[in-house]
Amino acid sequence: MNDPQTIIGRLAPSPTGAQHLGNARTYLIAWLMARSHQGTLFLRMEDIDSPRVKPWAAQQAIDDLKWLGLDWDGEVLVQTERFCLYHQALEELKKQELVYPCTCTRSEVLQAASAPHEDGREPVYPGTCSHRQAADANNIQGKPFCWRFRLPPREPDFHDGFHGFIPGRYREQSGDFVIWRMGDTAGQSVPAYQLAVVVDDAAQGINQVVRGDDLIPSTPRQLLLYKSLGLAAPGYFHVPLIVGEDGRRLAKRHGDTRISTLREQGVSAEKILGLLAWSCGWLPTMEPITAGELLSFFDLKTIPRRPFVLGKEHFQSIGYTC
Ligand code: GLU
Ligand code: ZN
Image (cartoon, rainbow, N blue to C red):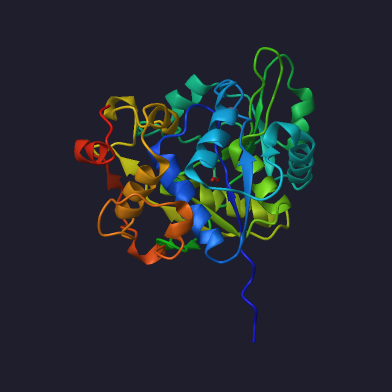
């Protein structure tokens, strides 16, 4: 008989702002997925997004998780302490000529992009600098540049543990993506999310990634990086987000859904977990419950595929007027 593989998952907050109810729902699912199988769960602070990172947000994310009763194993891994590893990966990709230096500014990419883009989506890179080789970086003088990964004609399909088959996209719908960002005025250049997340998931032995389904378009790119770096990819579970009544992702206009605010307002963690558990179909009503108690109710299959629409009645149910 085969022993099922021990699950190694992770919680990966970005300290670019406060964690809100939507983040909490994803973390709760990730925690239950690991803990209901006696798996390991790591906490990784994804703090490389330097201009957007807030100095208070990492500690607050830790406080939020602890308060919700979501624990993790071992030390917190901090991405800004791991640049050396990301550099090694970049060098490996350069050696294979899979990346090239790109000097295009954001406005140049926007101007050249062929289609209008939904909010929050990055523009499609038209390939302006793709004729370059990695070594051409030595001849670029006085201009900042980023490193882009050369996409093959088709991005890989993958099987999502929650949504099922996700087809890879063709080049027209995507574009060569940034794996190392352009230096800022101080010349500080940092790895991009796509590279750092792959290097770290692999280094930590993560075999189960649970994250919001807004990241589905990133997964084929990450799979390409795994393959190029000779690393084993994890299984993916992309879970639906919480949206406001207008159908858009949670934002300030939907009311203050920050976990820290709810905590300060005296809402209990159990009430929040009860609301989230009900939204996932694990409880028939929004009764207060602890994370530990939820272990016996958790079922991935009852989670609706559509985003959960958070309305005023839900705030009321947890005794909070925003
Ligand atoms: N740090 C990312 C976020 O908070 C999650 C990245 C991931 O799970 O791959 O949106
Ligand atoms: Zn370019």
